[in-house]
Length: 134
Image 1 (cartoon, rainbow, N blue to C red):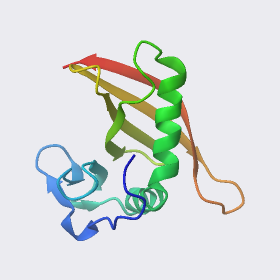
Image 2 (cartoon, one colour):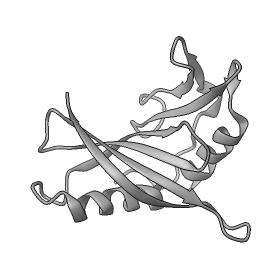
Image 3 (cartoon, rainbow, N blue to C red):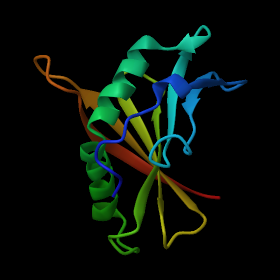
């Protein structure tokens, strides 16, 4: 799995022209791509805060994502799953792009909905996954 406490270089976030999202490339953080929604030329404040909260507990969220795929996708070994990107495009949701070492041409996407109770940290639960052939 990924290192537990690597600082996210938020100062490196840049607008992806024509896509209306802000981006930290995979070369800058844990080999993950981080994507945050746009709001009139700046990162959306709510989504940026949400991204920072998730990244502060990245290991927990990645474990949830990988556990979910292991439970439903049994044609591959349980090991080999890798989170490639975390996307924050709408409030209270998290989208993770995931790959498996035995699935060379597949891109898996896990969709998660978040909820917060009594000021606690956001709790995300997977709601569905998809796979596309690349």
